[in-house]
Image (cartoon, rainbow over all chains, first blue to last red; front, side, top):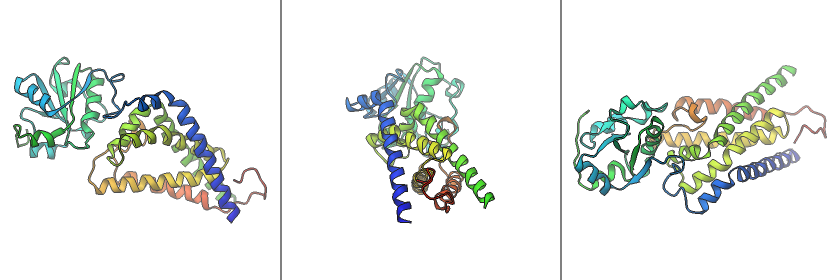
Length: 162
Length: 145
């Protein structure tokens, strides 16, 4: 029995070593990029998603005030209903996992889009931004602080289900 | 006895096949998987990156060994550990109320929820059956490890 366990441990260690070697070898370039400081903010990189940028609340506020961008809320409908950026359209990520049709966004492809989710550590906005990128939108900006920072900054808010 | 062996072989092919598939899908797009790991909001950027670089290979290799019948107990043990980890992660994520794509099979992933937990539990049951089965192979056989 003890020999059994030892054999299992040895085999498992060998498989783990093989995986470590293969993972390192096939991802050497990516690991190099990580060591050079990439991927700090997101795994959505300028190389793969050149039309996605990350912006602060201040920049989002400017775009909002100038009416230059369409705001897209990636949170679930219930959270959107409880409060959102005035004029924002709700595109819940869970309803668009297979992709976003440009008609669902209701804006021309060249319009500036500002995408946000709850804030803090939320990732739905980035995921939606990638889908929008794939759909062909030209200028997508992810609001990094999300809804939490928008509210904390005392910016306009609209409640209701639209 | 033969029926039991046939059943164990079936388990190995099913569990191993699922792990090979899920590993290969992620190996092909490590950054997408890294983002999915990040979506669970459990680990930071660096750890998510490391998971995305190494876990898929561990899945695929353990799956391949399990199907091939080489180091089958060791691979069944590794797979059981991974499944236990997935089950705990999904359960914790559900309790925290985070709506997340499970990230299991690339584009074919669905939400982390009860069906996924059940599926992982069934796979775990099969992997444990392989791990705990009393081996009837002759002593010193190359198959046992």
